[in-house]
Image (cartoon, rainbow over all chains, first blue to last red; front, side):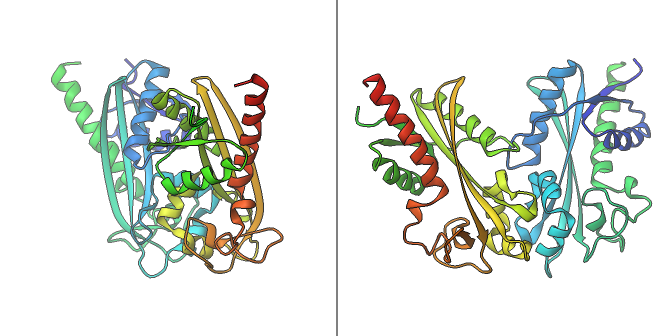
Length: 187
Length: 187
């Protein structure tokens, strides 16, 4: 087969990033262009699980979806599972207004891998960090305002973001697990 | 029958308010204590419809749910369909930080009435107004920061809130529609 697993998303840039990451681990992704319904759940895990099952019902093959959220500690985890909506409405400028002295935040990525309606595996990774005082670097989601721990630049400014990010870590977990399984099953 | 329609909610105070409003129009509500799943949809209408169908599957009888959202115009409709989550995380203090000179907002209520899995009627009402500069009056949701058009006090401060609110207007629409239907069907 020319690919291992579908990657379902409506965002081709997100797919390109994921493909480039997983290829380093030998895992080949194929784009499944799809607009999946998000349930209004309290956790990214539930949202990702629900989307993965929907995606499976479209492609009838092994598929992953990725869902990410920014959790600001002093704001009780806001915007968390509603990160996309919050980004689309108040944006980074709104987030900067809300954050005062306590700037700690977690960027979380969940990969949900589905091979059947009741068969979903979740892979999760967190990156601790803080919200910057202003937007810095090229615009992509919350990247211009998130500084990972131990760094002095935002995701947007870091050249090696794709080797340290929450998405990288979650995809790496999944790819290693998948390739191990593939090897041991002799596929 | 000692009641006309179930009112599904996990919030007994919301039921008490609704019951007191609809009784003026002759409509009797019965509390259905239930924690309904919210889908992550872009409109209150979709969320309310989904919850009403869930509620029907619990009580197997005519049932309404009410869903409300605050839409701040200059913030692209934030917090809108995610009003509960936003209230629970950043609260009114967060909203006040986000709003600057353009303070216009709409408080919207949707009543979804369900009598079968594919049979949902929606009743909607908007109240135009603005976000106050500080919290005023007793705490209940966004009431301390919403001033309806033509008034100088917040919902929390107004003695007659329940005769002018978005929830009142939507419940009145539903109650009138229901009682007309009941009369014309001779129930």
